[in-house]
Image (cartoon, rainbow, N blue to C red; front, side):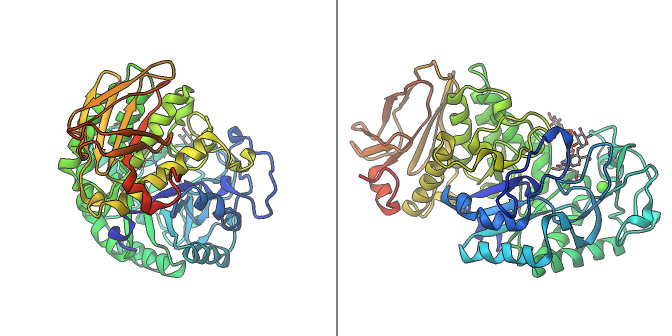
Amino acid sequence: ASADDWRNRSIYQLVTDRFATPDGSSPACDTSNRKYCGGTWKGVVNKLDYIQNMGFDAIWISPIVANVESTTAYGEAFHGYWTEDINSLNSHFGSGDDLKALSSALHDRQMYLMVDVVVNHMAATSDPPNYSSFEPFSAQADFHSECFITDYNNQTDVEQCWLGDKNLPLADLNTEDDNIVNTMNTWITTLVNNYTVDGVRIDTVKHIRKDFWPNFAKSAGVFTIGEVLDNATTYVSAYTQVIDSVLDYPTWFALTSAFQTPQGNLSALAAIVQQAQSSYKNGEFMTGSFLENHDQPRFQSLTQDQALVKNAMTWPFVQDGVPILYYGQEQAYAGGADPANREALWLSGYVEDKPLVTHVKTLNAARKAAISANSNFLTSPVKFLSAEGTTVAVSKAPMLALLTNGGNSSTPSWSIPAAGYQANEELVDILTCTKINADGNGGVSVQGTSGQPQVIMPTSALSKSGTLCAN
Ligand code: ABC
Ligand code: CA
């Protein structure tokens, strides 16, 4: 599937080892042990109803290739990022047929499969690495000479020195060598074709020279979204020129800090989003918008105020990009930094009757309703109608999101004279199904309760969606 095909999608990110076991059992899984816990691709197939019931129509799975098998200084390679052999699958997650079965089960549901791939490095369990353990890059000459990245302001260091450390070096591939480049390009073509992959999440994009990426993306032949872990839009924007899209890390930094406390800076969030809108190749449209992922502490490890949580979770669904939800967020998981943020989902029982599961389901439905009500929804940039103090109002017609970081004991109010609705139009807050009317000029003035967000849409825009606030 192309970038355009992904535009209206909503992605559920999961760590295969931690999402579902093949037989539905619930083994203990202590994240601090950093060991394989038993999740597999078959397990994912069995739980697709759970994902689809929330309104997601794509999943992003953790890396699939064979990793180092031993117990390292940082535990086992359950997350999949420690590649040893790019030409074999990680047998902990199942067989090639299991992966193909996942791909077709998704396609039967009109859902997409996104696979996470690592191109920058191979993982070693000794320093210096035993190069002969790598497949196919088994010679020292296939790698940049060893030096660990120390200066993130030095781009040559970032590209040619190594991630990891002496305990677990991530040997940096010599991606200036044509043979290596060709091997990687052929590899991604084959991988996408073998498993009928619809999109590729690319790891460590800032660690390879920019002009490596266009041919790699072309060889993938499907939507590519890259991880460029940096808080500056000025740094990240350059990468939007070489692959389809990036994970929206700059917004993530601003979003997390804006909604973490009532002191958070909502204007700073607005500023970052506007910078991204004006400097990224496709504006914010194709970026992956997220509140959590497997590398960062979960939002609920930063605050447990459920009003703040609900507001922050709303953002990725009411802005320009493709929403991504990290598994477990809907179950209110609260693990801190890696490895605590990689909890087993089976320990939640996959209960669907829970406040945040309902919240996500409503947000996905609202976005789909907005997409079908306005054929320009996916190409109209979100507008900040106000951002001051503890409230912010953003509009993406026909949707008006009224957010607040006041917290659960606050009584927010929003007064938006130019909300863009028709005079006296009937509107509804789809999070509570409370009806209100626009004023004579199409403006909206509402008072909220208990720091809750509101997502306003015209009642007429909901009729097509059927289920949302049906009455
Ligand atoms: C393991 C242990 C950890 C332990 C660590 C040393 O080793 O699990 O507990 O702390 C995989 C595994 C990890 C594992 C690592 C290393 O491998 O998942 O569990 O950690 O063995 C990607 C993936 C990630 C994956 C890898 C490696 C890469 O998403 O899951 O990790 O394949 C850098 C990379 C980024 C990478 C990330 C983990 O490290 O750029 O691609 N993620 C600065 C740098 C960033 C850097 C970051 C690291 O520090 O600029 O480039 O990310 O913390 C902002 C600045 C940012 C700054 C942040 C901290 O502050 O704007 O630039 O980021 O203000
Ligand atoms: Ca590199």
